[in-house]
Length: 494
Image 1: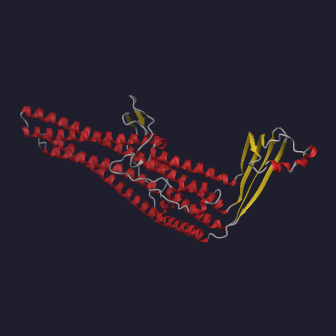
Image 2: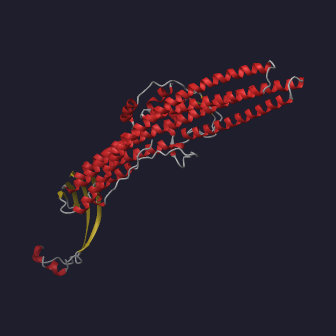
């Protein structure tokens, strides 16, 4: 299930508004929801981060014993794709907190001291001008040696305050930021479901491979016994050389099957280790057997109702719709006046003469008079994006219905396949036992025995594959309902 990726259109007009730029940064970050990439033929963290992890268990001699729950827990802690989504959510939360400052007063304290020298003549107070002020000096005469170069020491301390009292774009942008944060949260929860599904599927696949190896080894042991019997019988002259050759071919063929099964198991274990943070060279042993339990019958309507309440991608898109609605409101509210306040209070002291308090209090009312073309363009663009999200939301509802119905069909079909496969294994086992008795009694040669062994091998392989598909289909159903992380144990019958 892919998480919808949205791209918000940020017009230049809003960025000119005081305090809006931080909110726009939030929306831009939140729009880049992590994309759940599909599994490729050659899975790699280079193409899909969910196939990678942060390695916390390095290589060593100790063998890790891992249950399904422990493996899923390690995936939720170390999976690279989930880490990226969690970091994206933290970034959105951080910028949301930055945007909160637009509603709070900004208070700063400044202080400075310094020596200042002024050239009065350069500022228009030359000797001619100063002489006109002679009447203000004692005796009515300008003091001799009066210098036009002055020096003083100025020490200041000020407390500054600024706050936006009312701004429509800021208010609407804050609402959009809240929806963006909720969208990022549901993107993270959807990513957790992705990790649970991938890790559990990889674990089940490795269990299936292990069962294939066990079956191959058991058949190889039987073939080894049949080969030894055929060889002894040939030496005794009771069977033809052809029977021994046929038994040897069957034994070596089964050896090939066992080698291929062991190789597949090792490769799948490496993929599992890469997803949960274990070094590829570390030995692990999967302790849980392949689970099997019948799933309680559910109707599409029941599962669909659960999905609408719990599907994280559906909730993510719903919050994106709220976010775009708020963005549209932010664009429209640019026509409203903006009221802000700023001021300061400080103390200044000049050359030790004494200190005096200074202050300023300024209220600013900004009223947009005419920017109609830009405002309408911004509003229309936001309206188009909002309509697009609503269309995606309607399509997703139908897509959920389709996924739920398909998953229920897969579960039903896989359950029947398991039943048929188990019956085939029982029949093939009985046929092999009967044929073994006939060969030992000298009624048949070993050609029918080889055929019976091949039939049993095929039946066992089909059973393992059918059981794996059944469990995977139940995981897919839980994911379609949006409850995989909470109830994967229930669906697997653990």
